[in-house]
Length: 275
Image 1 (cartoon, helix red, strand yellow):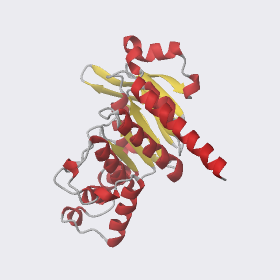
Image 2 (cartoon, rainbow, N blue to C red):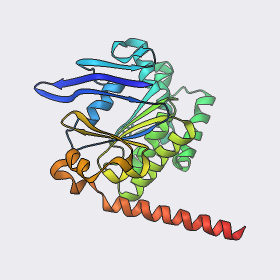
Image 3 (cartoon, rainbow, N blue to C red):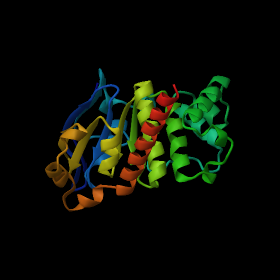
Image 4 (spheres, rainbow, N blue to C red):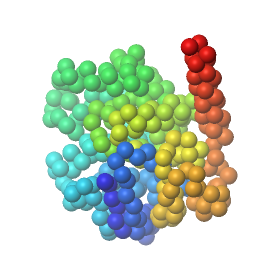
């Protein structure tokens, strides 16, 4: 169980995360929503220890995340993989090597720098790419890929860490609706098949409703909603987004999700009729 107790983070006079207490059960898919500046990204960075809380405590089981340093901190960051909006791939390297870099938290740095990877690691990287439908691009340079393809490579790299938690910071913010759907479906499949906890910040409400079991709404650094998608009322949406409530709905993504769901249902009916 990942638990936050009275966690606060300040940047100068700005309180980015304000007295947040919540927990995440293993295997959940959680969407964190809110306006820009609500504290969503800072919350994930505090969990991964890319930032350190000024007050409060973050624990996972009997591990006090705030007290970790050195090898213990590197092990935590391997266990708690991070996916960024900007993909953070090494553009001049091929896709396979970018995925293998995910082993750096579990292996010595020097062999990774010189691309000395084991046969097992290479096989696992190929499997991860195949799961993301990216194996055919394994030998391409990362900078030749589309944004959606790069994000799927970043997810494959995260899988190489063998994490128990994946933190995705606005993973679809810069993607078109089709690629946004592919990325969210990939995260959902990993959550379901591998039982990995996925906590993702999402700018649009529709993606959170479509893919997440649980939604956390933040405003001004506070958690003001924590529940299922069905429990998220129009009044609460207004509290979370304020004047941005209307723009929080991405109609193009909604229509893409709906079309995909309809196509799946049609395919299932055709298969049933064929049998």
